[in-house]
Amino acid sequence: MIHDNAWTIYSAEDLEKLEKLSADYIGFLNNGKTERECVAQLVEMAKGKGYRDLAEIIANDEKLASGDKVYAVNMDKMVMMVNIGEDIIRDGMNILGAHIDSPRLDIKQNPLYESDELAYFDTHYYGGIKKYQYVTMPLALHGVVVKTDGTKVRICIGEKDDDPVFIISDILIHLAEEQMKKVVSTAIEGESLDILVGSKPLKGKDKDAVKEFILDLLKKEYDIEEDDFISAEIEAVPAGRAKEAGFDRSMIAGYGQDDRCCAYPSAAAMLDVADPKKTSCGLFVDKEEIGSVGATSMESHFFEDMMREILDRMGIYSELNLARCLRNSRMLSSDVSAAYDPLYADRFEKKNTAKLGHGLAFNKYTGARGKSGANDANPEYLGIIRQVLDKHDVVYQTSELGKVDAGGGGTIAYILSLYGMQVVDCGVPVLSMHAPWETISKSDLYEAYKGYKAFLIEC
Ligand code: MN
Ligand code: MN
Image 1 (cartoon, helix red, strand yellow):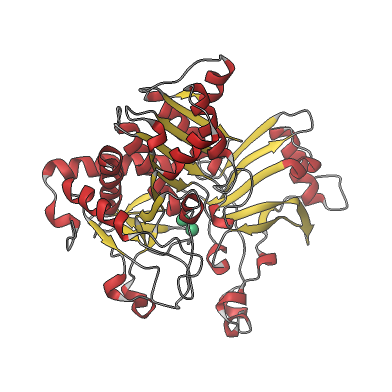
Image 2 (cartoon, rainbow, N blue to C red):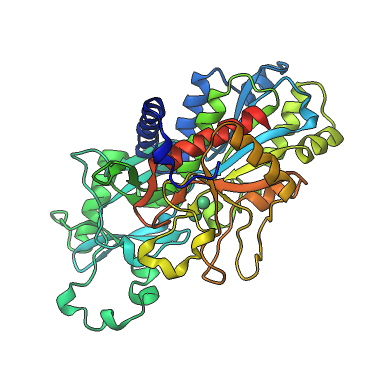
């Protein structure tokens, strides 16, 4: 249903469901600031609904059939869920796919240094960020350090009320005459995004005493040595909890909503449809923000291989059955869209832009410079999707990522389309996408959940 503003049609019951979903989602954001933390939460959610680990089923040589629910984890950073439906699986699945990685600053392999009695962690940014947004804001460190004996030390510093936070300094305005003349893209250099981690010297040390203090503390509190950073994955992310936003609390502001505001309702929808007719599949992938490359990305063979395993457990594995299953599947690539921003109105073409509060946003195509790199969804497929959304009173809208030639972007849609399946991008519109704090509307989150659920039930 194309509608002016979703908020105007809600019943008291809708509003209650919307607030419950929003509160759960805020909890998911607060406990999921990295892909690993999101995977851990998604696995717990799946287990709670009776999903079982596919690895365990394979190890026990168990069979799978209609009604079975499984999840598979790839290197703790990607997870997929499959709920085997009544229909023959080679006739296709309904797939929801979202990414759970978000832009941030990654700590380098050899990060710690001291300069003039201040200790720093050197970083390399991950994904598309406006570098100036990351200075003078509280950051938290999340991740793992793996020692040579295989021990994994989990790090999460900066989120609890009494935790310290980490800051990247910026030159004071009084001395910024030269900086203020620079263009925004180079005013803050990537190499100068170094995080201040300490300022207290270790007694009795002459050289690099502040760095030595930090190393001494890391050894005592975490049993980490300087060399252990070589085998670590530590992400500096905005510290603090996601919040309701606005006097009317109609919005949610928080870190990492691209693409967790689509991943969460996708998972919730999938887990709420207990017995689908067609097999449903949820994909929650890593590395989308750097081009879907690497072993935990959508481009890895993990999804395909797990489908081989599932078909094998069902006793119907063949490459032909796999190809048929994938080719006959339908997918909603659940990824965010740019929300129309009245403060930057000239970057958008108003008729073809997602508006906050106007529901689930469909991007028939993404791409840049003449749709380059886009999965351009088929109208035949969009016709079916419209019918399903209308049947379930889902408020939706269509969108392009800004006006023609204003810029561009991509999602995982094109990767799944390689199997010959029908794919379209659809998700929640986001204000200030990729900023440390992004903003969405609760109503769009709710409509996304309703839309994803309708897709799994009807398609
Ligand atoms: Mn995204
Ligand atoms: Mn993104």
